[in-house]
Image (cartoon, rainbow, N blue to C red; front, side, top):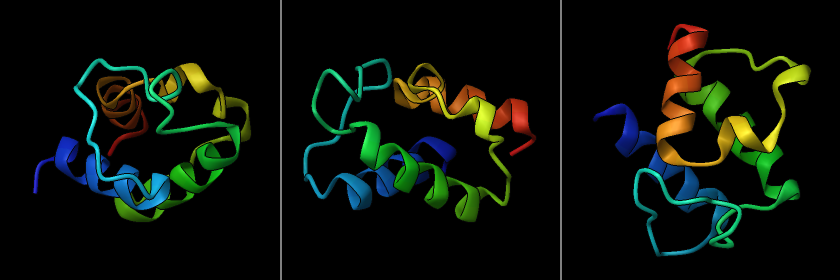
Length: 78
């Protein structure tokens, strides 16, 4: 399964919404994520991709869209 597909599956589980966003669509503006769901998303990403997200990186801009999440995970080595 491709990284973007894994991220979408995790996002679908965390948001409990059926609609899947486009690569660049804002997850916060679309209502798929909020500050509470962000921590659940990060926990699921850490588990799936076997990475550790530092607390200092828990900023919405790192998780704004599927493409930003994918790029961020690449920087972490996932």
